[in-house]
Image 1 (tube, rainbow, N blue to C red):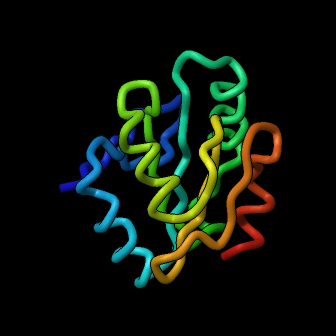
Image 2 (image 1 turned 90 degrees about the horizontal axis):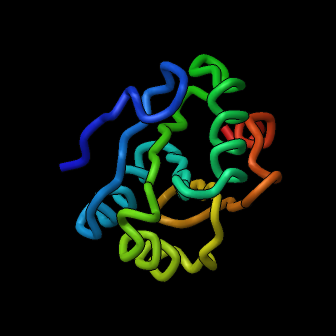
Image 3 (image 1 turned 30 degrees about the horizontal axis):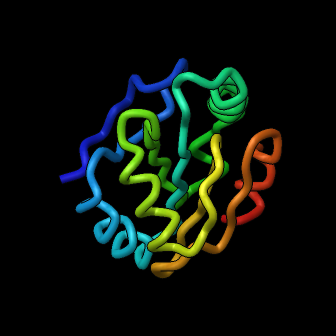
Length: 123
C-alpha cells in the first residue's frame, strides 16, 4: 500500500512516497482516474534538491487539480527507479519528473526543465 508522506520536502506539499516495485502497477492503475506526477529525487545531489525546492515553492494544489504528486528517493530505492524507467519506457535521469495518464508516460523532463508552469499546462 502506498502511504502519504506530507513532510518529505520543505513545504506542505502532499507527497506520497514510493518505496516498492509492487507499487508501480498501482500507479499505472491510479493514472486511469487522473494524472499523477512522479518525482525521482537523488537525496545526494544538489541539483535534485534545488529542483525539488523550486517545485515545492511553486506548487499550488488549486492550479493542478487532479495531478497527484509522488516522490521516489532513488538512492534508497534504485531498483524501483529502474523498474519505473522500464515499465513506462522513459530513460532514467535524476532529478526527473514523469507524468502518467491512462497507464502511460505522457511527459517527462529532468534537471532544470522541471518547473511548475509546464506541469500546470498538462492538467
